[in-house]
Amino acid sequence: MSTSQPLYPSTALGKTSLIELPSQAKFDTLFLADGAGSNIDDVTKRFWIVSAFEPVTLFSAIATRTEHIGLVYTVSVSDNEPNLVARQLASLDHISHGRGGWNVVTTPGPGSLNLRVPKEEEKDSVAKAEQPLRVEQPIQGHPVIAQAGTSAEGMAFGGANADIIYCANYSIEDGQKTYHTYKSHTVAAGRKPDGLLILTDVAVVWGETQEEAERKLREVSDLWPIEVAVHNLGMGFVIGEVDLDAPFPQDYDRDAGSFRQTAERCSVGLGHRLLIGTTQSIADDLQAWIEAEATDGFAVIQPLVIDGLREFAEHIIPELQRRGLFRSEYEGKTLRENLDVPRPENYYTLLRKGAA
Ligand SMILES: Cc1cc2nc3c(=O)[nH]c(=O)nc-3n(C[C@H](O)[C@H](O)[C@H](O)COP(=O)(O)O)c2cc1C
Image 1 (tube, rainbow, N blue to C red):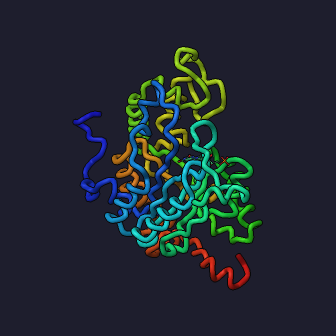
Image 2 (cartoon, protein in one colour):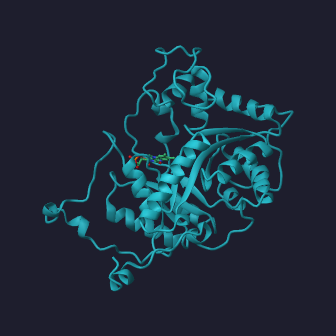
Image 3 (tube, rainbow, N blue to C red):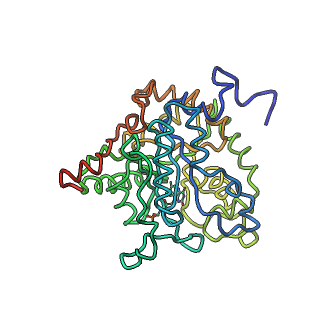
């Protein structure tokens, strides 16, 4: 990285930490992905996932340093005991004064502990499932529910039950298909379509000019060892068995080039759509997705971590605000208020109404 031409000029946000910056930029949520740490081999032991804080512990700490931003973390229902998960989520919702959220995932395959709710005939021998939940009702009724299913069953579940869907699409056309599938499930479940927010993952690399953005992309790409980048393609490709300079065999990415380029871009964007450009071109792209009803918003991944986040806050957010596409102030106190998704009615009230 050049020192004579700083990539990241200091500004009013220059001294803000990773914890405070997203709230200053008025993001809705911080999101933590998580998963089982199985199958660590020579390649995967070099990933960040081998050393990551446990999400609810980390978010409980962050909750005490923030006021508005939502805190959505991932818990697999296959790997975690339901009563503990519910208690942790409810506790975080209280600690954060109504900003908790759960990304509900299942874990397939051998990495899963495969815990499950016991069948009726097993319940006598497995008392845990009967434990009362020893925590007050969460401030938001229950935490915001996020989901990222891609199977037909997953999409039906998300459309019927979730408040937020995270999805990874690479074209507006694919985004529109996902968007309309989910919203039709929401309507079929008797909910208003606006009660479900579709957020599409996008990895943003910003530059004053397109050339500067491309240069930053190359700098970040160079940080990925090529054997790890090839592994990240996730299709069973192994370094040594592929010709890195040959064209990539499938239409995996819009801008697929050689095998090496595709692997590097996949790694930089963590498998999600890469958006490399200037303030205008990035804002134009995001606006086009919103206007085409391909998404309701975005989960912004930062290949450049805090510097990329700072640039997004300093350049892209003000442009989106100028276009009337993004808030200038938080609307409410809880995450549900800020997302404008309904607070679920109390279970016992529903019971009294005969609706549960
Ligand atoms: C954008 C996105 C993010 C995801 N994040 C996680 C995650 O953090 N942890 C995880 O175990 N699975 C994650 N997944 C996987 C799905 O949530 C998982 O496949 C789902 O629980 C199973 O539903 P499905 O069979 O309908 O895909 C993610 C998927 C997508 C598309």
